Length: 123
Image 1 (spheres, rainbow, N blue to C red):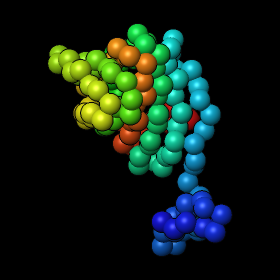
Image 2 (cartoon, rainbow, N blue to C red):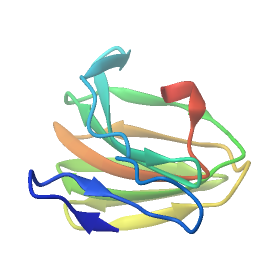
Image 3 (tube, one colour):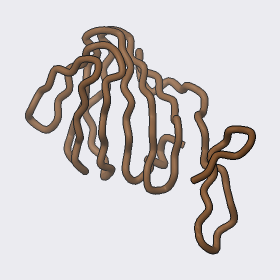
């Protein structure tokens, strides 16, 4: 990776022309009281921010991607499989592939999630 004179990141692979990875996109409504914004992505990894109003729910679901979640702000109740966790700002957890999970914002807050590989359904 390198940073160009205009501040953009680029990556050069052997035999591949230099290119600029995707940068942050606009906020989109993900569900009632939940918005998401793709911050960066490559086929192998995706970084996404989620904003929740107090009481908003991230419905239980599962996907083949490994997910890590960092609580940037607020307080959340996370269900991962059969276990429930209360997470505060600064806490994090990892959700294995295909494990059902969901969350509820106890307070208004923000999550930073990574997905490996990228969630193409978010593009």
